[in-house]
Image (cartoon, rainbow, N blue to C red; front, top):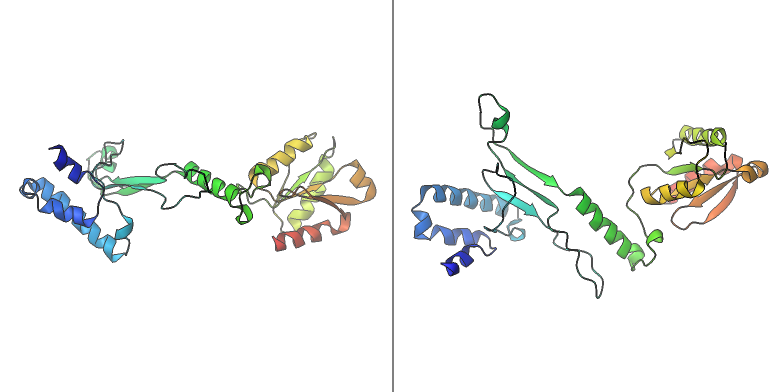
Amino acid sequence: VICDLRLYFSPGGVSLVEQMFQDPRLSQNKQALEGLGDLKLLFEYLTLFGIADKISFDLSLARGLDYYTGVIYEAMLLQTPTQAGEEPLNVGSVAAGGRYDGLVGMFDPKGHKVPCVGLSIGVERIFYIVEQRMKWFSDDSFCLDFWNCEKVRTTETQVFVATPQKNFLQERLKLIAELWDSGIKAEMLYKNNPKLLTQLHYCESTGIPLVVIIGEQELKEGVIKIRSVASREEVAIKRENFVAEIQKRLSES
């Protein structure tokens, strides 16, 4: 019996379905034949789409929800980024779902069956994999300095307006208005006395590429500091030229 179970619970493909059709214990069961017919049709469609070789048919797969009424599935990464001596990323499935014909009927007063197929995507797992890939393969080499590795951007903001000074809200508002008027996506902290380190850490964590910095010294000299978040390099640009410099840098990135 154990050998029979091992035969059917080993991952396979359409050949496993055909083998199950030949099993007299299954071929004489009406419900089993219906299920096998659905599986055979599924593999016919998978073959037509040219993806049958990417599908592993596994009878041992189980989902933790009891409303599934048909095929269930999980999506796994075919490859994960690895380095010499590093173990592959083991995050499990990145998406999962199946067929559930009775779920909608649970909320229908008449209990009508509505055929449905759906899936959920593990966004956090995918982001983790992307972050590791970007960390490991930044510039085609292993990135040892986490803060200098390329980051996953979590915002469309292109420029952050920052200050190390207290009571510089109005000056920052003037700068951000100029950036907005030029079609540049910019943001700032609307606190009167934000800490510069907090502002810079925010840019690093969200992937904002550029920071413009205005303080008392910059105001006195008529310049604006432009900081690259990735390299942490800063340059001073004349106040009247800072928007053009920002546009140039964004076009080159």
